[in-house]
Length: 387
Image (cartoon, rainbow, N blue to C red; front, top):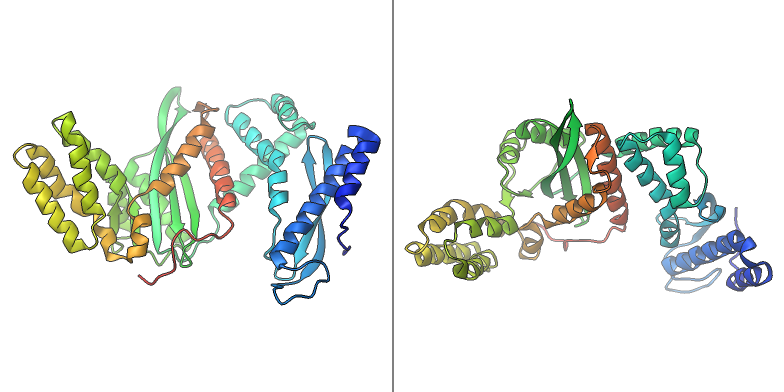
């Protein structure tokens, strides 16, 4: 299916609205979406329709039909294609937020055990179109299938992996318990970050972490050069059991926070934080070790518990010095996962207490999958360099 872009499409949409008011807004939006996507494709190819230019970076390849539901009804769009198959219009991605809202609404209501009839009313209010109880039930099943497929997809080579956990309230046997939500983020060989997996369980921490790491391994995760995480004892034990030969970097942000508990006077905390920061930002490992020795000497009389803690713990935050200088800043903390956790907290606050582990996993997966989609541009978070 092909058709030439029309430079007057925008005017056509405006004329429809002027002549018919909002009764034709669906058709007008279809025209505007189609036009925006065509403009995006031209920018992607760096050439207009039938334009001959040395700057061209590919060729158009017709259109693919796609129907999306919106507040003004279903829109039948013509999504532009390219021969390399790599183009996907962001204007369309932004335009289907109603579909995403519907999926999350289904998940949020579903985890609270709300009847499909009530969900139908809520989604109608949220999304502006009617959804039957049968459609809600089917969509819930499809959502579970989609999320499970994403959680079990194959992985590959990820030199750098970040691990972290957060906790959600879950009902079990008439009690409200804390369920651990485990998340892994990896950086591939091109320096692009990906969410590798998520898991939710009410179990012993080490057992849960070990099962989670083994599942990543079974899905093909390999080539790890460094794990970065907090010093959770269960996580450390699981890493030693599953990936004993891979170096571990203790999150420097958490180390800074932990250090403050050992500073006996409030007025010393800023100075201690500065000393530790200088250690972490040193140019070389030898310089970092020298600064650590100076800090221990400086504080051993005034804060002996602090210096004892520093001797035992600060070296765990220096593993990153084994890696390229241009990578260290991104490797020394697990902040990339912390930001994901903040978004999960913001969204799961709606549910408050989950009906069970499965319902918690469903909504958390939906959230991280949406974050993963937003990361899908392939933008590098690390420069290319050989460790």
